[in-house]
Length: 72
Image (tube, rainbow, N blue to C red):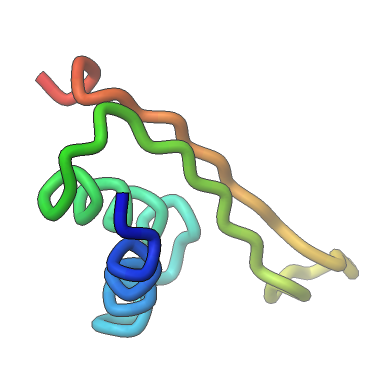
């Protein structure tokens, strides 16, 4: 894998348009990786520091593990 290309695709996907949910961003990145690269599975963890919540939270994270087999 060309990790520079992957990193560029992730940054591009993360800055191309806004989204309200970490889950949405994670899914967009997974879809982009499957579209642009021959990956058979993708594991992604996204963390947002100090998310806007009614209680004090230092960070919120979402993790997805998706295989191409899961896509059908």
